View 1: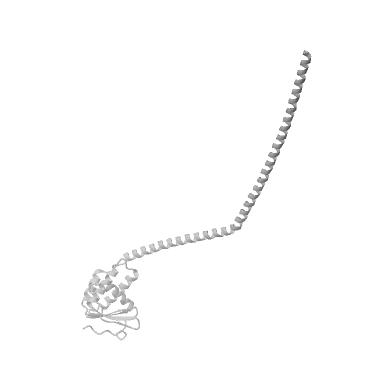
View 2: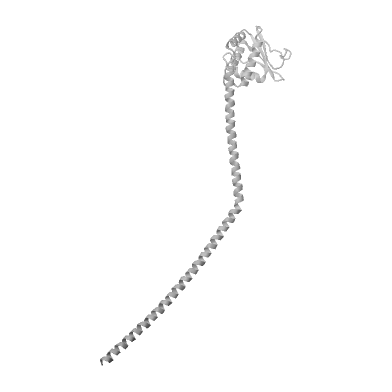
Length: 250
């Protein structure tokens, strides 16, 4: 009986082991199925990712090519604009340099003119005092000159202490005028011209004109007569017929 019991236990054990091996085979089969399913899913996802990557790469390449094509199309215009801006900048720089050069030349010319005015000899004080004395002894003096010269005389002598505007100034068809000045007014004119020749700010043209008028007055008063006739004209002195004198001042 003991032998039969042991044989029964062995059979039961073999049966139990067989069941476990069958279950293990089923588990292995299920694992192979799961593994195959996972591998398939991974392959599918990898294929999708590869396709998406290729799509993105194609789209990116298309956009880059499109941008490059657009840039190539705009490049000539951009180059033209850049060239125009460069030309404008160079022109502006040349204008600035020209302006600076002109300013420097103007300052140099002004300095040279100022130095020339400072270096020119002014009318001698003794000579002017002598001219004042001779003018004081003149009862009247007729002045014949161009109307612009007369305006110059009046402009500079009008504020002088002894200047009196003549009662009548005769205008001629040739553009000249004639006026009768008293000795007192003649002194005012000489004094105004003297100050012009001593003014450092007077231009060379103003200085020359004042000196010419003063010289003509000096020539007219050299005879010591009571009446004088001052002719300020680069041409030959005109006769009394060409410029009849105004009536004498009573």
